[in-house]
Image 1 (cartoon, rainbow, N blue to C red):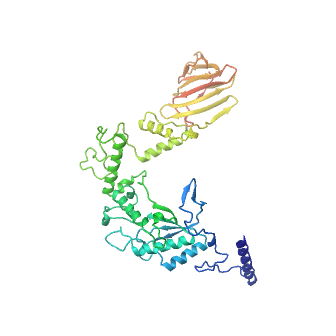
Image 2 (tube, helix red, strand yellow; image 1 turned 30 degrees about the horizontal axis):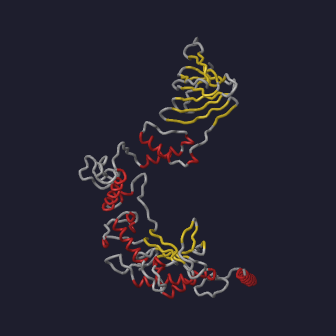
Image 3 (spheres, rainbow, N blue to C red; image 1 turned 30 degrees about the vertical axis):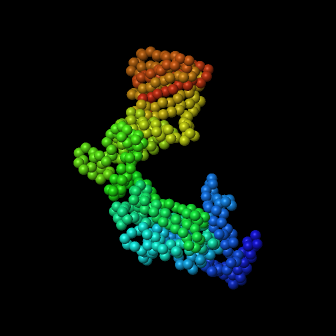
Amino acid sequence: MRAKVVVVAVAAAVSAVCAAEGDARFPFVVSYGGADNASSVAHLLDAPAGKHGFVRVVGHEFVTDAGPIRFNGTNLTGPANFPEHDVADRLAARFARLGINCVRLHFMDTWYKNFMDRRRQCILDDDSKTQRKLSAAQLDKLDHLIAAFKKRGIYVNMNLHVGRTLDARDGVPVGSPWANKTVGQFYPRCIELQKEYARDLLTHVNNYTGNAYTDEPAIAMIEISNEDRGLVVTRRRMGIKKLAKPFQDELERQWNEWLKNKYCGPLGERALPGDMVGSPRRGDRDGGPLGERALPILSVEPSYTKTLGEIVDLLETFVDEPQTLNVPDQRDGFAKKLYATYLSYLPEDQFSYPLTMHCDNRGSFTEILHTAERGQVSVNVSRPGIVKGQHWHHTKHEKFLVVSGEGAIRFRKMDDPAAPVITYRVSGAKLEVVRIPPGYTHNIENLGTTDMVTVMWANEVFDPQRPDTFREEV
């Protein structure tokens, strides 16, 4: 509280002086060597970092042995992680004054040139033959920086794999993406060398703290791989096609191995149900690069050939079903199976969805589902004494099923002026379907004392532009 009062008093005094001189502006400089006065919050940092044990996660919080800990962090990139000793000490003091208690050490695993006039050395040794050696001189600078941070109560977030692009010098094939992104997740040589780098760095003993980084409680967290990604898949292409052939072949090999182990049991237990993905298509003698050969999937019947765009479009129709009422074509085996799979993954609070009820003083009419090949299903509710319908269709035909209440369905043939009225009595107590043929004007009347509920099927979805519905009393 006293520090706040002092800050307010200083600010008020400066404002008074500036106001007296007619200018409200004044220089405000955050210096490296500022006095330990009210503008510094360094005393709020619980120094040294790690005094209460390792940082860990409990529930949704970072905690130490002393309880929850909150980080106010910043970022150092590239050569900024390797300052001279005196600069490191000044930097730690400045961060502490600002209340920063965690620093991310980013992009230090390769030579750095972003926004630089030239490439700057980071942690790798200056050796053109390999990217596997760590520089002793650079490690010393890093050690001193981390020790200075620790002393001031500043924790460290250490990044491992960020920008180092392993290549043929160290046994990684030509054609890897920058920083071995994507391939570093599955290519064995990349994984082996990433582990080696992590082991060499994290088991290294900091001469200024006496701890290996694996045993250093001031290391709050470690980022294993920065901004990595899987295969990029779009409607136009699969990212696997953009990988160099050695990486394609390795990914294909691992995928096949996984499929065999998952779906065929121990290798050799039984024959695989089809050709493996490496086999060329018929008429393709050499198979060509991956992407021109069969897709990476074990052949199990039935199989379907679909583009990613077609699958996305189909999934979007599933998502839109509560609004469109459209159910996928069940004659399409792929759509049928995909729809069943989609439904099995619905959240349990999304099993139901509301329908639009068209209500008036006669009752209501509600569409339930639409199908492109089999028409639509609706529910009609009629109040006692109400007559609905009084129309006919050219080609549309329907089926009515009264499931509650009692009534009558009446018909008269349109092309015969002398045609008699045909009446069917219907009741929810005796379920029967009444077919409504084209060319017959028809109605349905509720003869009971309660609402009559009728399930109605039509062979086509109602089209307001071509309703095929013509008014005519029975």
